[in-house]
Image (cartoon, rainbow, N blue to C red; front, top):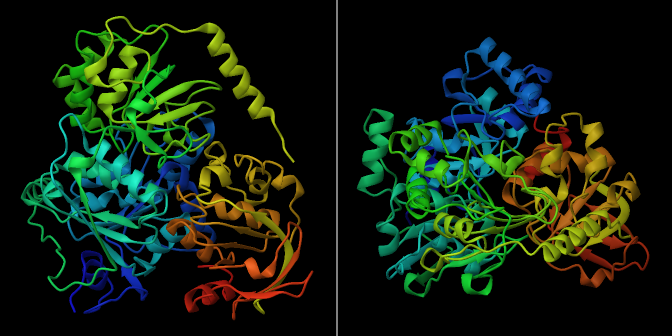
Length: 604
């Protein structure tokens, strides 16, 4: 039996003829990247563990989350990285360059068949060119910098076929929002997904980047696009050399095959709080907005900028509405200048910033305030992710049209007179938002015992666990106090948690960002373990590498657990017992690699 694309890439980079799903392999990493908020922790890991660089020429820093250095803690971390880079000959894509994942493609560092890792949880965007990209935590990145390799479990592959024709007026953003409506936040959890079909064949690079960038929001390891001739030519021109694309074998095995018809796709918008909560745009049309944002790694390419300019040309942003536009890279910014798009943006009343991630990681622009309603081209709208307001996700065309109208609408339905603010409604909205913000509702033996916290929710993301406003904290001792302070109903967790506690939760725990702090905050509090039906892929790696016990389960109903019960847990056998009533059950025990790292006290 043949291999899938991801199996072929991993096999070559692991020095093996063949690999299979579930197999753990040591993978050589071609390109190893740390961003500005994770970079200082990578440096800390390197220096505290006496590690040396395996190959500086494959090692990079990208300063994209706060590419103005406007926050003192970000500026400090960036300077720590610059100093380390000067000492060791590492190239820095500094605050004038743009989003790291885009730079890797445009600078010719990543092309079909390459492996790359970054502290960016959207590093799997590189699947757009048929490369293997993964977001990882600072321990993994440091290990790759020192060894050139990281361990990786070969994922099962799913084949997703999109046939038919995308309806007129719909863009790649609508395609991925329709996929989110179909698969939800965890419908692709743990899969490498290969994209095929007549629709996929016709997608340009910017379209593929948009779709690939939201694979993380569906739980996918990566969305891999077999490169067509256009992609191959682009990558060869950027890399300055021939590239050899990787394609699946004709007899490759797929764990699942799903076929969708693009004719059924409609213009969709994600409602605030959940990227997968997408609805047809008509359900939210005429929702009054305060601000609009165009940019992020999902929609910051030149094609997106041209689309927005076409709608804004000869028009003006609605009174009282703020439109923020942030190109993905400096090259895109310069194209906007050369093509006269910046003039169009400014005449329309938009704020244009330098290239970067913008609001996604509390960056240079894009944040909103309590009660503020934003429509955004970003890939995430988790509560608190882009500020204290509400964020709808949409395509660049819908965002631009909405900015002109003053409410959510489509390019074919922009009113002659923009909507005005209803101040009574607006003040009531702000009052409710502020009131909601103030609410405060109430060993190496492998055997653990602890008090149980039951948090019966799915898709708890890393912003809920450890909000991005605390990302510059590098001292684990300080992290615990911020645990779950952005998870509604559990803001009191850090105050009431006790050393030895065990958290039991639902599916896809730790979805979202690659931040190591979302693991270390529990260690800071002395929490012993987390049991979940499933974990986000990056979170799982971060926890294992930090020797923090996480385990998955299928059904614990037989334990008849209540909040505050005491649980006995055997990491080796997976046996669990509720000490209150003597009821017993099973969870999935540690894997061999997990136990080895746990007994070693961590990856290092």
